[in-house]
Image (cartoon, rainbow, N blue to C red; front, side):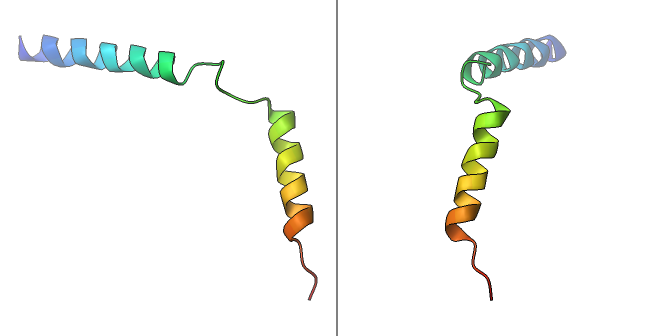
Length: 47
């Protein structure tokens, strides 16, 4: 019974994780690359 409750809790946690961090919240890789490039250009210093 205890193992069943742990399994059920794990399945519920996984479902909530998928809903909370689903594909709608992720940004495209190209957009992240452009933001990183802009941040690097703004903060890059040559010694």
